[in-house]
Image 1 (cartoon, rainbow, N blue to C red):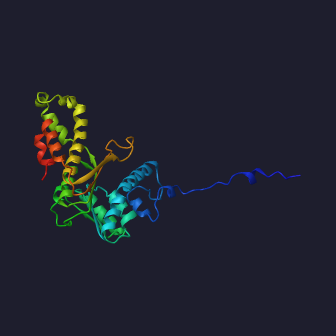
Image 2 (cartoon, rainbow, N blue to C red):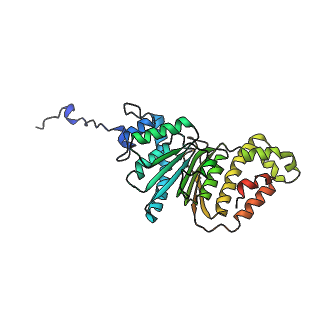
Image 3 (cartoon, one colour):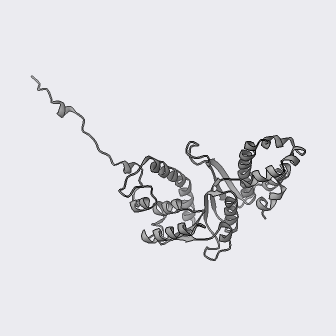
Length: 291
């Protein structure tokens, strides 16, 4: 007669898993994630931080191949991060992909003194020697002697309004191989549309697209990125536009990735100029129709 096993013997064993193991990458600095307030001081990860970290990882997935492409062609790499803020992106890129690649250097560009100083202190504390932080505007950085003459990769994430355009000018001046942009708070084009709205009504029926204020704002934002893409294509960049994360996470969600091919799109500049004229935006030619 078979003996009946006790319920304790047949019960499945409880398996304990480390919740951090699901999100942390091999060799990732726990101290860095604590300093960036992604992890709590006792090493815990709350739901908001988990979502934030996944978003940064998602962006890194777009940037990692660009890092590999540059370092596959040469021994050095320079990356400039405009509007760096607390430098979440720069620190995580360095920690995950560049700290073991001695030719790579990241420059964080930010105008807030306290954030620049904190980033410098954190880089020194974590022994990240190939990270530099500059207290200059995006426009000032173009001529700054603290930066090299050429930059391989330029990023500008949620750089507000015309700061994204300044980052594009910086990238063009520095002959960047790759440009990664997540534009934010685009108000300039909408303001010019609004300024000339009555005049535009008599010029083109397309003015109905931005007749209502909410449409002016949304159309202006959409149009701004279209003009930026044409500008980059006119300067010999191949442009890809996609979502960064799901719309439920952020409405500032458009990701523009440009790679220099030195083969300008044949009619990009002409199309850009035609759009500015058709929509009564000629006063913006100096911003978008750069030589």
